[in-house]
Figure 1: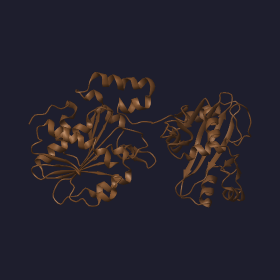
Figure 2: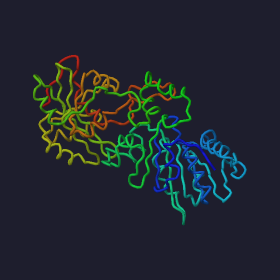
Figure 3: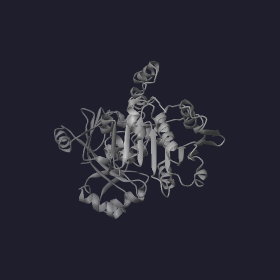
Figure 4: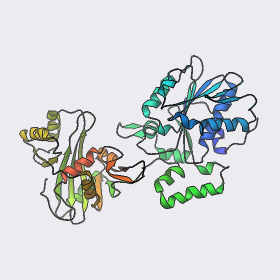
Length: 420
């Protein structure tokens, strides 16, 4: 049997060294085709049951099932490898089979046994809990176990990036995605990584490549994903003027401000959300905002939070806090803190105010502020694709702390007392 394949995938087709294999690539890179071809080759030689999963079961018919059927016919195997469409299934002469499931019908997963190979197509659409459940379904008494994941590299907020590359919130690190883009294929922690773009698919028409290239003119986010196959920020940035600098440099620049306006803001949290305090300085003449210190913790009782804020020297500083928590503010005032409820503006009004700063400069010591605000994007209405001005891709506690701390400051004027 001979089959012409894309050179960038030749090694991948027969490399079974790693249990986990992650294919990340742009549109038209042929990653799904070669994942399906690899599975067919494996099941022709070894009696296995392979499970192919997508988030929605019905999408298999026009994608993975159709792809397997096409490859089987192309290889001239239609006489011995049988496909059935109801239910969707592929059977091989040695007893191997491919079954198809969707995470939208979890009850269908409970009845399957002895799965030794799983392919998660468009794995970024599947929830992380679903991925972990599937790992539990991957078991066989004698055969080596494998799981193949293929995806377009969507947001860095997606679980695929956090699990296979890094999760700054949990201080978890495996691999820099830029390193994968440079090397194209690599093995880390028993995971085989493979990166591809449309340039790796020699069978694509030139017109398709030109279509992808045109995305750069009107949709840079989609161009990054579709053409370059890279993770990043999906959507419109809330604070495109946000930047980071070394802490020492930030403090040196603050010291040079002729009339610094000092502000402190606090957002309250406990179990799922965080206590977030930001210390800020405004350079009103330049319309620049500096963020130089943060406090960011959850699961803390008020007394412990108070102790730690005292240690940071915040007891004598004016702190504007969320006015929806009057009891908490009253507690801190009883302890001698100069804490006051903020003037409540709408989320849209607060966001517009922050966007009026020409630059927002954050110390690199404020790691949680950077994590939340550097790639903060607006949510989009799924029906109209228009941005929703008061909703974001995450719940940014440090953004709320900024709002509260700057409640009586207006970028266009010199309103507001100094908070030191």
